[in-house]
Image 1 (spheres, rainbow, N blue to C red):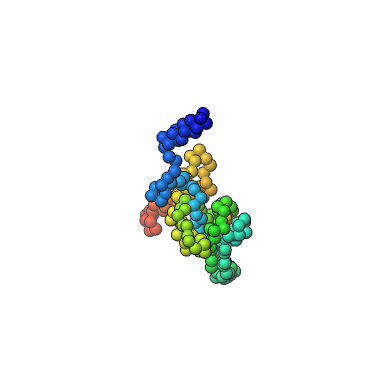
Image 2: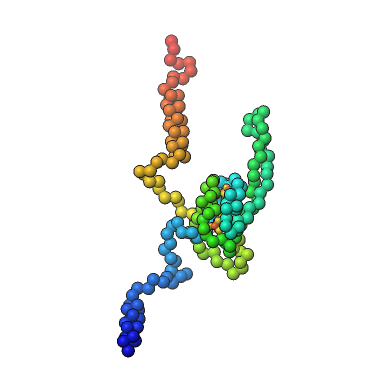
Length: 184
Ligand code: SF4
Ligand code: SF4
């Protein structure tokens, strides 16, 4: 009897509490912006170095490429060869969302997007090819603002110096009298 009363008390207490479940898909969950939903590819940054495919523990990144010869930048220079991406795909049926590929990419070509609504009835459709991975880039949130107390990022420092140099050159040009003037 005592146990029954205790059980009923717990049931009544729980019934009057606010529910933590969301009525998905009518109510979308409020996910943190950096949630691991899907991987986006910024293919302009990809150099086909293959690091992500080699480090992926699930072997679910498929990359194909070919080499192309690039003419020399200056006359008399040497021809160079570069990798051209033919295929970049991720099989999200195998992916375990560990994020290793994103961490190891040396060229910032892979990003997390919080999008998670890409369930399929056909498992083959869970392999997202490069165009679909590229489209996810539109859903990647902007990076957080740099810490004002932190060190200036190298890229920002270099860009600032280039702007200062260009402004100094412009100021020098403006201060110099045009050719043919200034002498008597
Ligand atoms: S998140 Fe992990 S498992 Fe998924 S593709 Fe990247 S490295 Fe592979
Ligand atoms: S690690 Fe980055 S640059 Fe290298 S192949 Fe993967 S996505 Fe491309």
